[in-house]
Image 1 (cartoon, rainbow, N blue to C red):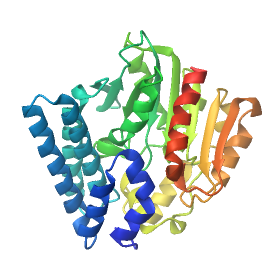
Image 2: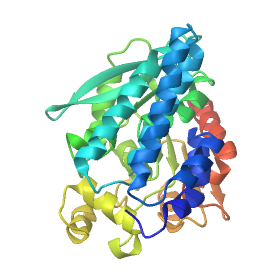
Image 3: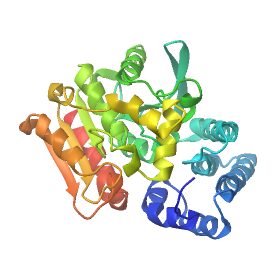
Image 4: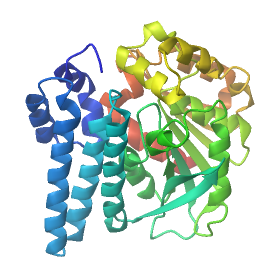
Length: 351
């Protein structure tokens, strides 16, 4: 899975785990219980199953709010159980199913609830999560796009921020992402899936697609800008950890190389590197003509800072706001308490 030990992986990623909703004590216990990489999916899944059990107990006592939190926690822990795990695709898919099943149990209990929908795309159905603020009539809507290992389930904390600001959210796993990867691997024109999602949203009278924004996180920091350049229905863009182009495969960690190879459907990292030659915003970013927030960390080793600098240079200066933290890493997870609310505020201000 990786050259780092599981403990080092958790230590390096602690800010992200906590920002997404992993409980600190659970994280420390999981760190202590995992002895090797073979233990990783098993231990995380065990903690997920325990959260589900607590959710069932809460439901038996008509404690729906508590149950919602536990079922979501189960989904999140199942997400991390398969996070960067590629040794057994069948096992990975089984954990993914447990993740989506747990989220389905949380969805109607959340406040506001999440509606689980689907839309067609090139012969498959893509599942999406639509969430509409209960106090707003026909609110703006924000599409949340994940990255290499960010999915619609672990985007809930950002959805919470948006709905508190009167914004509906729609998250989905596109080709090569989340549960969709088992139906369709990554495609060069991911923006076509975004446009299909917008087509679906236009059929929903509850939201105002004339005021539509998009957030792209990590590799989504490539997908979202490219979609914005192609589909004029997108009125506001947040590029959160920009991926302007792709580092050479040998400059990525072993885990990232394995992930890129998996989502490409190719047999080797070399073949994946050749496949992802399309991943470059040059020629696309220049067509972005909407208010854009660029968030990046100066210490980012996954998508180095030049990615953000190139995107900023390509967009008209009066359209761009930036949050560049020189002492922060990938997606500024250590600044989550600053960055994530700022995303919601920027979207609310512009749509």
